[in-house]
Image (tube, rainbow, N blue to C red):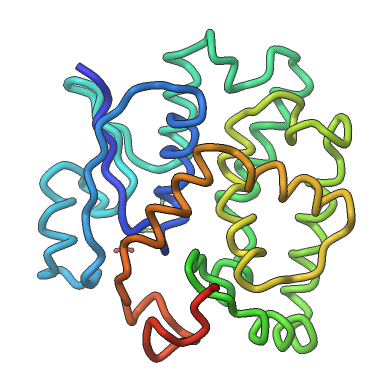
Length: 232
Ligand SMILES: N[C@@H](CCC(=O)N[C@@H](CS)C(=O)NCC(=O)O)C(=O)O
């Protein structure tokens, strides 16, 4: 039996995007279960559905036979461990430590970016990005740190730790945030962004996100409706 992966809306769910693109990009088969974001209230359809399998009441969650794995970092580590042939954690000890550190850093940090620049695949919020960049020092500091991480790849044409690893899956949603808010990045980081955007898994995620055509108000601090600031 293949993996069962439970995810939320592709337009908004950064946490869901991480394991989804990791599995897709390295051709590990899985069945996808979409749990629509209606609200995160205790009596919402979303909570009712997800709480049947995940005690945290959140997506993503991965089911492997009688094992349930929740939390995107735990899922990524689990997939890497189950499929050593895919080398989702670098063979090299130093690079492997770095992949873990930068994934954990993304997992638990970057609060301003997380709160003020939510992923919205179908929207172009360049005007908001400009204003945040001008007015918010914490956003500038977090972008500078991301720029540093992306620029420190082993070589210009490499992924973050050489070959594709769990770290790239952790930063792919950040690439989507930059796509939406158009925050300034160095030339080297822009090359990395294009490399991630060119991945077939990321392209598929973007396409499917655009097909959802759903407006979820609690994930939309900057739009009143779907037609506003819709990407061309
Ligand atoms: N640390 C968790 C966070 C997961 C998370 O917050 N998921 C959001 C959707 S993108 C969610 O399900 N939120 C429901 C809620 O906060 O009640 C992970 O990495 O998987």
